[in-house]
Image 1 (tube, rainbow, N blue to C red):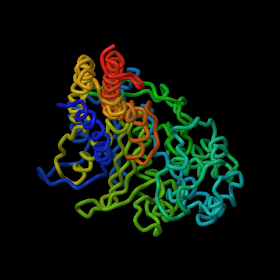
Image 2: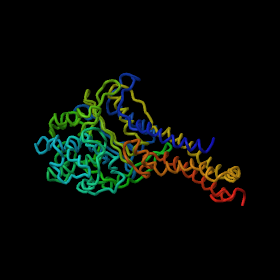
Image 3: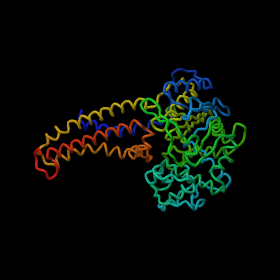
Image 4: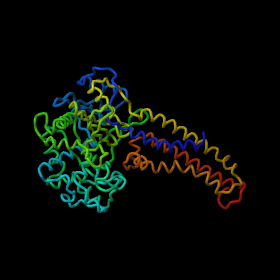
Length: 504
């Protein structure tokens, strides 16, 4: 195999990543019946989750399953990255499941007559300024439905210096442009919910975390749930695991700003209370109401414009392959995954949080898929994360790329001799393809971010899919070594610019 073909394959892998990313956190889909009569109860939930953990090596998870106002099962399995066993009372970060809680807080202000969904945000939040004048038309509804026109392509928040407060987060957006006209297109963007949370602070006159605690968590009995501003304030700094080559590695999480968009820390017990309220029109299992049924239904309903979006307000709603309505949302940190799923037809609610990171460790979505099967009376099967298979293919490519790089470097002298007497620029052109793997490596974070519609860095990609970074880094190192070896050999054989052909 030629060097150029291997390095070309590495580049093609980046394109393939796009397809894998789309499937990495699958939406709940219909399953073909495998054995009728499966029952959703505590025993069946335990058996499936324990089997999943045994087959995949998942370190830890918490699960909440409800049916109407009844708690079917809340439990923890395995252990945290710092060692203790996980239980139904273990605090875990739920990442972007937090958005639905922020949306509910805004809807409470709407119910109180203090906010109107279709009024511009600047009416309630004069400090909200952007470089693009179209921002003045962004409405409160557009923030919550992620149709404000803000986008990672215009303002990549995770690649920027992270703020410390909501006030700082909103102030940092003053130089940001918009990607599209407000209301014209859905684009998932965390700062929409930073602004929404700051709006709650300003209108209510209370810090956002205290508002959520007093008006949402406490009334629902979620006594162990809090909202924090950064990942550094999460238990053990949000330390968790990343997957690579069929195993897991403990890693600390970098400091991210999280308030409003992905900052809630909760437990399996409290997630069950949240699911019950969502399936019960805003009323807790004990009968306490935190919002009207109309408000809760509105957070579950995508807007009429744009017509092609499934995103509501902190939830996505769609019909699966069987025609069943599903309401769900994923949450992802670099070290944790979370899902919350509502099946409005049956009143079942499912929430799963795992201590494995995004993309290459889509365990929460896989467990959720199996539990949805149970809710439909179908015996679930364990579906292993895609990276547990894909990583070995990437490992084979890594070995091939490095091996061919060593071979190319060792044979650089023979390669240079064959080009003795040729014009130096022709030889230079032959070296150009070796720059491609190096270029791909330096831009890998941006390329993967482009495929995910989220901007990221190389360091973040190393959390999300370590085997991909090792492959591209190995190919870049091999290509660079070959280029240097050939360059040295060319100088030795008199092929540098301005040199006469022939050996020195």
